[in-house]
Structure formats: structure tokens, C-alpha cells
Image (cartoon, rainbow, N blue to C red; front, side):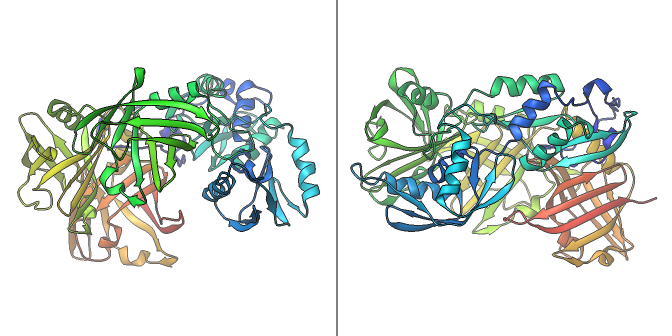
Length: 583
């Protein structure tokens, strides 16, 4: 089924939206067909249902059952030490205590009562060990095949169109998590509702990579192909450190690995080695690239011992990495290494990172699509908000343009090599924050990190071409004038501050607000970044419009209404801005 956003108007998810385009082309509206509705007993319904089942394997080190999960916080006594477990990170504390000595008997005692979450998300209170053991027996043997699919997950939100018996749309249901999906599909399986999934949707594999699908057939095939491609880790240990040598070798070679934490002889050297990239090759060769672009070649090998899996690294000129490391913990897309004496490395998989950096490759990266300033820190002060809505475009012949208030500010750039590594020099009149020489410290397909003394900048690529969702967003925004229908800031209604103002979006990227004798001119930009983001910058330090200078997450959009939300670091909504089209 192909359901265009223009059809449903209320779909609140636009996964990973990028740059606003201004094509005149109008996409044909295709209504869903009855044959594309989910059927109670269909393979697709069953696959989606299995994907939504609660996975209880993460806390097996506590409850020894993959079909149940212990609600946190919970208090446990591990080898005589009482610990409060209030996050999944604390599971590693238990394993560390278990692995401290090889010749002791590990014991874990749970302090009851506890709340158990079952595979259908039902919650029950367990008063004692006997009652818990009864539940564990119902789960089956350790490592036994179960119904849940853990190797692939939906990226939320997703939405379903709900139909009446005449197959007319009567509602659109938004699903935010596995629990909601499980309960909705339960209704489908019980033939209580007729529904179809609104495409496209994005799914995430266990290794962190994603795939976008566009119809029922493609979705069923994707889940089927993925359901057995990972270790579901349904044993009663934490993490995935039960790899064989062959599996560990293949896991290391699949993509480059980037250093995120580094400790050597109890000295924190993260700042020295952060974002160093290692590429494990065949025949025991490992290629390492530093932040400056220097490339070192070393050797690697693995073996399995009573202590677990070991990874030996050897570099002739890099003693800090040269050690036989214990593979302490393997999570999807992350590996942790340690050795006694205060030595630790945490690396994350990154298939996009570039190890072989050249001037030509940097030029090619820069000249593909546009780049927005995701972060700009000058002398310890974050100033990236000043560049909301103002993307870069790098051209050949060292030409660079910055779009500001719908107009292009022209400058020059140059890529070079110095002792510290590859550098990017930008020269834009009137932009002293950017008119600097930057060291390229990290380069991947869609991300460039730059720094110099006391300054850091991060550029993120966005490509507006061939994106129907962005075309639609641009058409909606630029078709008519808008007004602030509601603005709620931390529970306080401040809508009246925007009365009598008219807001407009130009296709050139200019944003304006007129009213009460004021005429503000600024910039706007819509793009994909873990959801649909709309950057608003009215180009003024004056209230009330200075308050709206922000990268807002779009939650709902129709041809006449846009709802934007601002979330804090804890995921709580702090502000809600609603724009409605003027009649």
C-alpha cells in the first residue's frame, strides 16, 4: 500500500526528515485498498505481533527468564553486597561482581516483593522466590526458541488507518512503542478492528542499521529475513560475551569501530584517542586512523579462554593500544574491552566512517548536498542557534555559499594539509565565527567534525532531492500565511503575545513575521534528524519571537495546521507551538 501524507494529513511521524525542497510537482494520491488491510490470521500480522512481544532477556542475570522482565528499581544482594538496580546499566555491575573471582560461587538474592512484566505487558506482583520460580518454569528452558522476534524493531511512531465495514477511513491511530503495538495488533487478531499500516516505515536491526519499507509484502519479507540474523541472547548471562572465535572475528570485521572511551593504567585518555577508528581486516591486519587523518597499521588476533574472549592488538608505534584485551561486554553495535590495571576501551560500530581520508574525498563529501551547522561552540559558548535555517552549499572552484534570510552569502573555502592533519578554511565576510581554519577531526558520509583552539563545529549533511515528504512540507508551509494559534511554555499559555502577527515561509528559505509595527526577517529549514525537525529563526533578539528560535520537532501536520513540540533531555515536553493557516 502506498499512502501519501497528503491523504491522511494527520500522520504524526516523518522519520528522519531532511531539507525543504520547492519542486512544483504534485504527487498523485493513492488510497489504500481493501486487500492491503491487516488480516487476523495473516503472516504479516503474526510477524508484526511477534516483533511487538515484550523481550525479557535483558535482565536474565536477575530473573533467569526471557519471557519476563523485572520492573525497576529492584534491590538485590550479589555475593553478599546489597545493590539497588534502577537501570539496565546496573546489570553490568552484577556481572562485574560475578566475574571478580574465578573460584567463588556466585549468588544473587532478590528482595521481594517485586513487580514482573510478562510477555503480553501484564504486570503482576511477586511476593517470594517460589512464585517467581513458577513463572520461570512456564518460560521454558534457557536459550529455548520463543515467539518474540528480537533482531529487528519498528522505529516509532508509526500509524494505522482504521476503516469501517465499507472500508472508509474513520480514524488514524498513532503507535508510540511496542506495548501499544502489541495491544493494537491483539485487537486486529481478534477481528475487532480493520486497519492498514501507513507507509513508508523504518525498522531498526539489532546492530543499529535501519531499513525503510513501503508496502505489506516488503515488510513481511524484511521481518522474515531478519528474525534469525542475530543472537537473541536468551541465556542467563548479561550481554553477549558468549561468542565463538569465528563469530567474534566476523563481528569485528563487519565495519570500522570508533573509540568512545579509553583508559590506560588508570589514566583517562579519552580526549587523546576519542574517535580514533579501527578497521579489522582479513589476515590479522588492523588499520587505525587518528583524528588528524594519520593511518597506522598493526595486527590483531582473538582466542577463547577460561576468562572469555580475548582480543590482542599490536602497534609498533602505539603502545597504549598494544595489549591483549578481555572482551568484557558485547552489545549490538558496541564492544567493551578491559584488562587488569585500569585499562579499558569502549568502541562503537560505524559503517560510514572514512579511514582513508584524502583532499579529493573531502571535496567530494562537501560538494554532495547541503550542510547544516548542528553545533558551533566558540570560546566555550554555544552559538549554533544563530545559524538555524542557514545551510552551507560547497561548490567547485573553492566557492561556498551560506543561505541567510533567503539570500546567499558568498565566500570561499580551501582544504589543505598541515602537521596536525587535514584542515578546512572558510572565509565568509561578516561571519567571524565561521571565518576560521578548522582541523577535520572526524569524517563520515553524513557528518563532519571540525575544531581549532577553543572552538568546535559539527556539520551534518541533508539532501532535499527526491524526498516526497519534504516536498509536501514545503508546499504546506509556503502556501499561504500563518498565525500562532497556541504557544504553551512549561504549562503557561503565552499565545496572546503573538496576537495580530502574520507569519510566512518563502520558498527561498526566508521566514518573516509582521505585526504591531514590527517586521522580522529570518530563516527556516525542515530536515530529517530522528524525526521531522523544523528550524525557526526569526532573526531578532526581541521577544516574543526570540523565544521561538529553536529546532522544533513536528508532531502533526495538515494543510492548515502544524503542531511543534520541544522536548527536554529527559524526553518530557517543555513547549508546544501550534501554527494555523490564516483564512
